[in-house]
Length: 343
View: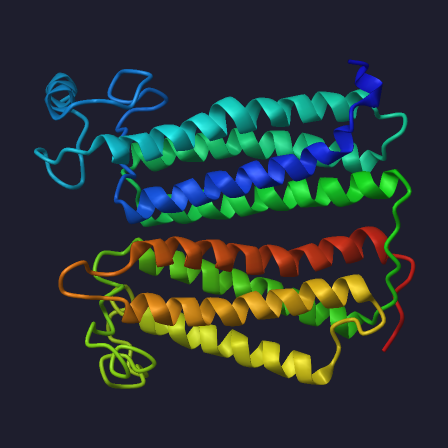
């Protein structure tokens, strides 16, 4: 097939979809407590496979006494738990990584027809995917410490944003323009929405990776567990780590009020249909995720605990909300530099 006929400008969007899958699998690893199910890297119990029996796991631990599982020396993982971590690495290392490298060389080959921004973004995405691999190694090395998990997530989101920016830049290079005529206040509000949703996401990730934090507001159901916190409003914070869920809730409410205020001001770039649609969709996903978070807390039962699949959806929707708001800023940066009106 003639490479000149290949629709390479679709590659960033394909990579965005693959990255979303990698993030979803990463969330699945977390809810099934499988973050240390492959204690070495890049191998998994010294092999390239995932079907490793408890006896084989025990033998590996005996051969590697310096390695310690935070869940105890006798803890063993199921084949499914190991598979989730193995598949996560396979997607990231054997599919996503090579395609990002391919993307870089394609953009470099097309430098005469593509902008400098597109080339730099392709180089940035290549650097970030290498960085992600290193952070993944650190996450395994440090037994899924809170900071390493948070850094891994933030790096994944930044990498996704680099792909989104490359997609937008590449489309612009092909002549697809998005008219932008908005005021500086609108851009500032979108910036606040972006960083507010990111803060909510990061604190939520801290809650989900902190032992006992999900139960910190109680599990007695409506209304004591939600919307209240142990039957109170949760104003008094005595232990930041254990009560991180209460902090997360107040942060969620604060950002939600800000988004409502912005919406009432009708400053979501009323003259720019693209920005308006993306920002409104971001507000909708934020609201739906609040409901999803409540559903997760109220899902607890004595028999099965929380419905952990709701936690994965909660993470994905929070990530989507942040990416939507951040995407509006990227679009404004690429298409609105010469069309911004003063308010």
